[in-house]
Length: 247
Image 1 (cartoon, rainbow, N blue to C red):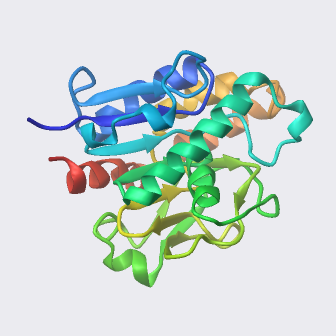
Image 2: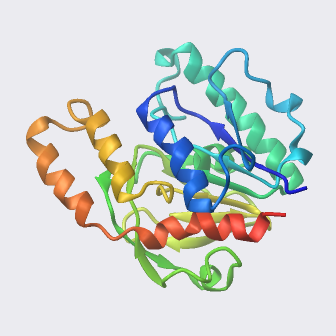
């Protein structure tokens, strides 16, 4: 019997999460009913990472989030603190097991901290689609070696990786924010960008963020920019990860 993939959610419920629940299995060629299980780390009644039987899963996805690890501790709401604690502990367990994992943005930050690395606010970026380049390690890695040597991906974040965890390789880099994709050990992957966001899915995020991350006057310009961005190369990371680890 084929094992499903687990999607560990680090964001509150809403339209963005609803989109991710559809896009990730679609991009990975997974049946959302049988191959894709979801745990929302912010829900009080969700199981603790220690109680999860990770042997049941072929691999684990860890989502992005509107929250940040470097946010002021005193201003973090209860669900933020709960997500942070659970994401870090889940990351520790996954790294200990070297279990196939793919973390996006906040998920990357959780894995970096769980592996003994650090975060920085030095490379914060607004929503756009920068050019990313495969490193020498990325050209030979089983997940990334089939990608275009240069590609674009949607990005938007406050935190980013500072000091890398031990036993980590950088697979994709960019001119401004240098660590765009990394692998810890043999099987723990993480991206600063969002390979799960297609052009269509970006519409949902732009609608959600208008008036908060940017004003309505800029929305049309950003909408046109995102529609024109060619991000299918980055989207292939989902299918490449699933193809490697699906049993």
